[in-house]
Length: 100
Image (cartoon, rainbow, N blue to C red):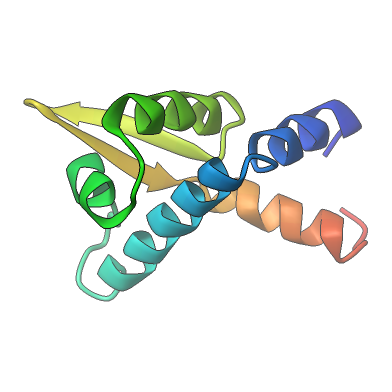
């Protein structure tokens, strides 16, 4: 992973609300993992579980998508978030200083 990409990821996670949002998405992703082959979470569920307004969550989701940490998909009127598992593996390797 190049340093520009890593900096973009860390910058996206440097905001406390955005980091909390990312953790919530990852937590929901993990909790649905045993039953779903395509783990995902609905933004409406996240809004209910966090004390952050919908417009703010929308902004933070956009920043997480721009950093490639998550992807989103619209299903009707619902927005679904998915964790980018491959990127997490890359970041884990980077942080553990393993050669890639």
